[in-house]
Length: 168
Image (cartoon, rainbow, N blue to C red; front, side, top):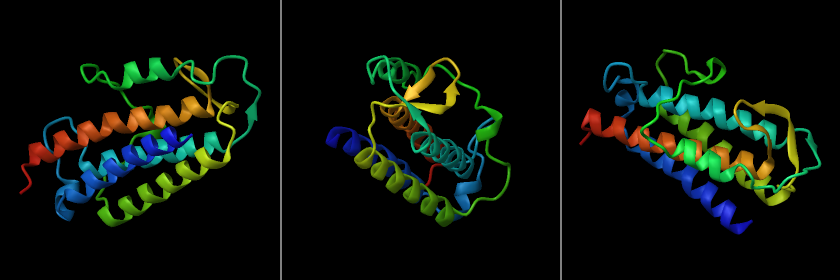
């Protein structure tokens, strides 16, 4: 589990670190037409990752497959930067002004919660409260890797936003 804790912590910390590089007003600047702001991207990650944290800590059932069966598929899908996905409405960020400090605080709390879950829960159990479209019911391990790969995808996008804004 040390490898999973390290990978989750590094990935979630990377999101925080890139967001922290923005000047506060630039968190709400649109970098190019059709893009989210850095604040909206961070809010999307808060909505998604806090939801997955609830799923991971929610009801579970016994697992009748390898606990990491879908990890490769999730990785392949989310780290393919040539494909654009539409976010489900429930985790779409509002078009509003975001507070960088509040976003960072929420992201840090979620990172701590993920780390605690990895350390204290049986990751081979299947999360039964949410069926992820295209993947089905995930084990806790698969759900954590969903958080990791989904976050890595958005760290990549956040770096692009930062570069487009040409922040110096």
